[in-house]
Image 1 (tube, chains in turn cyan, blue):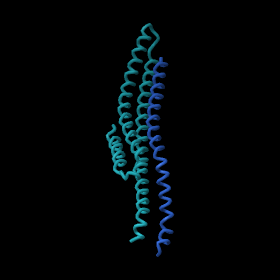
Image 2 (spheres, chains in turn red, purple; image 1 turned 90 degrees about the vertical axis):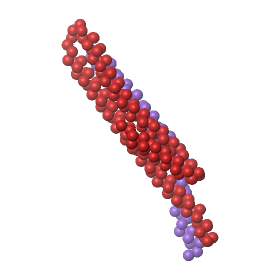
Image 3 (spheres, each protein chain N blue to C red; image 1 turned 180 degrees about the vertical axis):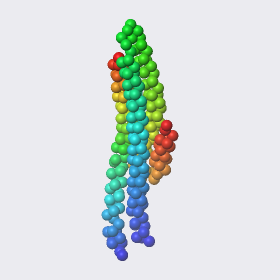
Amino acid sequence: MRRVSLLLPLLVVACAASFQERTERSLQTAVLATNAARDAVLAASKAAQESAVERLEADLAAIPDSPDRPALVAARKAQARAEVAEVRTRRDKALHRLEDAYVLLARAAAVLPLMEATGDREQVLKLVREAVAVLEASP
Amino acid sequence: MTLAQILAVLLPPLVEQAVKLLKAHEEGKLTDDEVRAEIAKMRASVVAQDAMIDARIDAAG
């Protein structure tokens, strides 16, 4: 009995370490998934904006020199800016959700070291789950 | 098996785990900073992307 009571605290430390490692892996995986989603959103918005600029450049090249040209160029540029603004609005909405996920993951990362001291494992897992839910709800 | 023998077997991995815990404790703050750094990277990418596109629109024509 005495042997068991001596070993018990050591086993508790081992179990806590194992749980913490698993939680850290979950956290790292969630951060990597969020990074991948962020990079995909940024790449898609860059491609969409570049496409708008390429169409603008092609259209402007096709406008012949004339007294009306400056006005036509200005109007076409305004149209391109409106297209780009629309892309940015969609992008920013997606990135805002990703930022929410990052904030939750940062909070989870911050409380993770305290987990062993307080034994409040659920707090970390709750934050990771919330971040994953935010990611899943992202467009 | 004596208690000394049990401890001789069990202690090294437990000490290793305890060291990992301490390292994880130290690295926790870093991870927090790292996660927040990803937000900063995201914002910087947006600013750079928008500036590049705006410059191309301004220069067009």
